[in-house]
Length: 429
Ligand SMILES: Nc1nc2c(c(=O)[nH]1)N[C@H]1C(S)=C(S)[C@@H](COP(=O)(O)O)O[C@H]1N2
Ligand SMILES: [Mo]
Image (cartoon, rainbow, N blue to C red; front, side, top):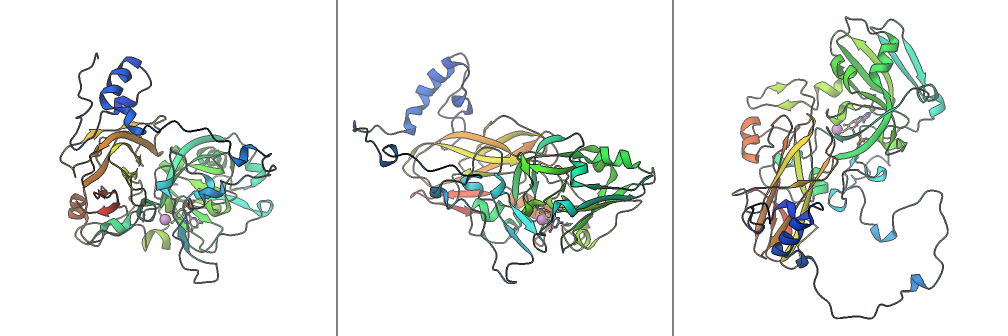
């Protein structure tokens, strides 16, 4: 072993060195893998006859035009869905089942959704995007016209500013990673750079803001600083390679990487360039961060760094003591995730997790760390640090800074309590 570390004791209560998973350097794996007892993942079984199952004995099912997940994955659905108060129309949200997913990408059918007044049934042949206001040439684009422009792709998370709001509550809300944190998802978005379209329209130097408006019955509208619009904003047409789902903005949405989900206007129909922010209903009555003295931080757009452990987590319980992989997701609206640290002793000692490649700016990053659970109660937490050096705050620090009436932009550290019987619950540590 060339490097000096104690694989068994990177941090308290059984956290192991992240490097025991590295594929490179077989020597290290050999030595440390043995030392750490990687064999502990599986239990030896008595030799068993290899049976030939029924599905091997007959030809399988016929082809489908658009495939569906296995019928055995029926629990992997968005939810909990709200009561259907208005006969299936109107406002609602659906959360991503984070605890059942792995990797960094959210499948399209499981992308979270927040729709303020239902999903419009838009015929792409009759949809137009208008760019007007302080421009030299107002322009309208059909879907077909936009589809002829050069496309760019980027993997980006979208997160509702109301996500994790329940973590501000005085007592720990019962829930899962999904119900507590499921208003975040990550997809590869493909579309036309907004800067390119604005350049074609000719931006008047007096334009400092734009207001983006959706074609839904909520007429969702948000003001965006011109700097963001000319930086990495996109009129997205595709989501993970296929046309955007109706629930996520078909046939086009505004993508503002790292900014409040609400500003990523779905069913985009209008971009108007302005001198001042429009002060729309959606940016004045909601989505603002309360600060301690009862004032409001106006126009704080990026979502700060956050992380959550998805495995184990409520509903994804531990079984027998032994070796496990702790895994979860981290993201920051300010850039790349630089580091994720994990504690298994309620914050006394921390170990750095391995970050799965690719680690991309303003995208979900998957982290992993081996843990030898000794079967005793434990408190697991993760904390994300982004490339600006920002550290995800503790619950006490965030509440102290914002007061008890805060509702939005909650990114405090989540604690999962593991009981001796393996059950995992949301706790305050
Ligand atoms: N036109 C329109 N755009 C919208 C909304 C809406 O109701 N109408 N909801 C917003 C909110 S509050 C969020 S969090 C995100 C959700 O995006 P998603 O449903 O694709 O996850 O879209 C935003 N864009
Ligand atoms: Mo939202």
